[in-house]
Length: 407
Image (cartoon, rainbow, N blue to C red; front, side, top):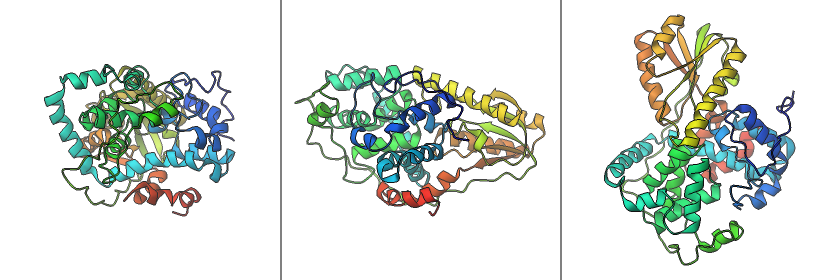
């Protein structure tokens, strides 16, 4: 059966994005975008037509980020419609997310340093007038101010626009990049620690040393189709930022676990909400969604998407496994597992970030009650992450082999 056999044609035109936080909505958007995922995407992907017309981009990132739909599904659907040469640019964008996650997974200290720097900056500059003007869209740079309002209002920005915004924040407004990354993380529907933090580092020139991204007025004017022209307002001669510490050498990515008990409980987090495709060959006693307020975005649109996605993932898991379902806080899980009498609680592997930290703490508490926490790693991650030791080019060269299952 085709992935789309049970999906109705989207009622809204492709220009409009239905940000409903369900797997069904994500699949409908994917189905609508598929005809445009080949050479048309490669030609037009850098153009930001504005929030009223998203027909040239997929806008699938919020669903992929939470694995309401998975990378394998998206790539498979695109390559069933287009040959690889036509769809290569789009496929690369899907692999970029895996690259960022794998790169950070092998260098968790980079995120720890970011968190430490952010806390210090927030104490020192939270009330800075310059930061407030930037966040509230009162800088006087029309494009930047419009994008700040769009981000807060919708929870999404075009990928090219995110680069422009970050560059202006860092090099023109001369604000700490960590505060800009935190602003994005609060509001983006698709925010995750790896893609967000490392993308900002890349723009600043810290990810690939000496290689930074400078927003240019002519480029903005061309790729917003004349909607904006910040000529004379941008610092277009800025050099890259310099790091206080060298980038750590990569460590081998940790392996995932496997289910060994005949009867288990499933625990869903926002890292992976497609439990139906988890490698579980056991009787499922119950399903629960771990509610962690503040772990994902705290902006109104982001928080609403997060809550809806968690509810959708839990409802589908309940239906698929025929098990009871509940939403639990971090302090309820041990008692829940104990009441079920299971030896294992199975969850999806969470890459470096807030959810992983929560699972680390939960693992210790469950172990004290003689319950094992099993973290299942998806084959996509297991295959992709080892190739994220350096720049994206190394992974990009492996994409055909990864698709064919030979890498």
